[in-house]
Length: 200
Ligand code: HEC
Ligand code: HEC
Ligand code: HEC
Ligand code: HEC
Ligand code: HEC
Image (cartoon, rainbow, N blue to C red; front, top):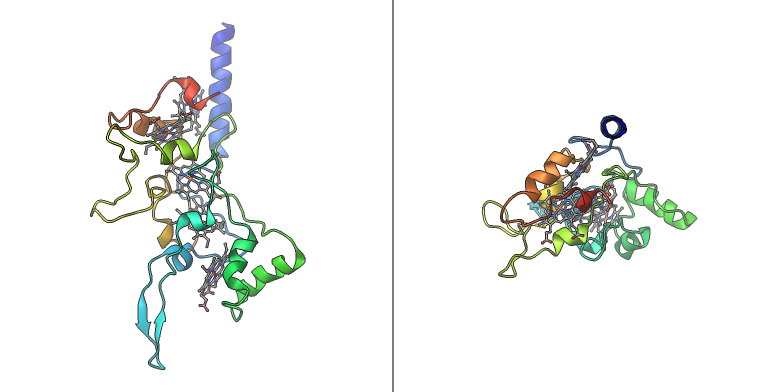
């Protein structure tokens, strides 16, 4: 009887957590600075403007890990500090409204209050590095590093989608137990499926 009550309570708490969770597909919070991944991390697209000059209307192709330094080393990926942005923006884009707003935070010594996009419930254990460093028997990464067309893609894309094409980052999957398990159960992944893997 007590066991059933416990399981029911866990399920009720879980559904409640899910109803309010930030890990549902489509969640797309607004950010304090209009930071565009398409512009920073996307591929360049050159166009000739009215003055006949060649300008880049696409992106600057900055690698994901230039700004998110931890995903291959630890559980969490990290957001860049404003110092990383200021590496370039101490002299680039100072005619742009959002760049100036970012510089205001920097000058005041305040971090930019980025709004968290992904946030799993605390009773779930997730580790970026375990995924990104996982290799099969022949030493190839288990998570795909090329797209359907065979072109190189960031390993992040399997879970986060094409962030390099997004103006605003949004959650691309329902990050629920089913989604985790669907991948863990694939024979080529050889990933653990016992409860303690993700609930410890
Ligand atoms: C120039 C720095 C920079 C680069 C390059 C960059 N990002 Fe980001 N990323 C940020 C910042 C700043 C935020 C927080 C603001 C936001 O969510 O847009 C962020 C947010 C995110 C988030 C959401 C984090 C959360 O709160 O859950 C994900 C996922 C992400 N980036 C993935 C990527 C991927 C994948 C790439 C490469 C294709 C990439 N980023 C390249 C700076 C960068
Ligand atoms: C490697 C250099 C580099 C880094 C690092 C970098 N940026 Fe940029 N950023 C640029 C360039 C180049 C532009 C384009 C400036 C222009 O169009 O005049 C730009 C443009 C922008 C714009 C203006 C977009 C527009 O068109 O209005 C914003 C906002 C911005 N960056 C925010 C950030 C933030 C926030 C970070 C840190 C998370 C960051 N950048 C890191 C190079 C960089
Ligand atoms: C196997 C799926 C998976 C892959 C691959 C993956 N992520 Fe994540 N990412 C997640 C999950 C799940 C969360 C939410 C973690 C949490 O809330 O505890 C997350 C959260 C984040 C966050 C928010 C900070 C944090 O750690 O909570 C950032 C930033 C991020 N990921 C960037 C990246 C980047 C950059 C890559 C590639 C180098 C990447 N991720 C690859 C699943 C993944
Ligand atoms: C795209 C496939 C994929 C998805 C999606 C995925 N995983 Fe994994 N997971 C793996 C692989 C592959 C491994 C590593 C297996 C190995 O050790 O080689 C792994 C390992 C793990 C580990 C073990 C870490 C350790 O200590 O060894 C945890 C915990 C984990 N995943 C949690 C999650 C959670 C939670 C989610 C959903 C939010 C998730 N995973 C989604 C493929 C995936
Ligand atoms: C690969 C990772 C993974 C494994 C293995 C796993 N879970 Fe989960 N579990 C999750 C995630 C992620 C959530 C959070 C779902 C959400 O927030 O919607 C969750 C949620 C739950 C919940 C809350 C209710 C719900 O469905 O949202 C319960 C209860 C639960 N898990 C029990 C278990 C049991 C029992 C096992 C072993 C048979 C297990 N889990 C194995 C990832 C995992």
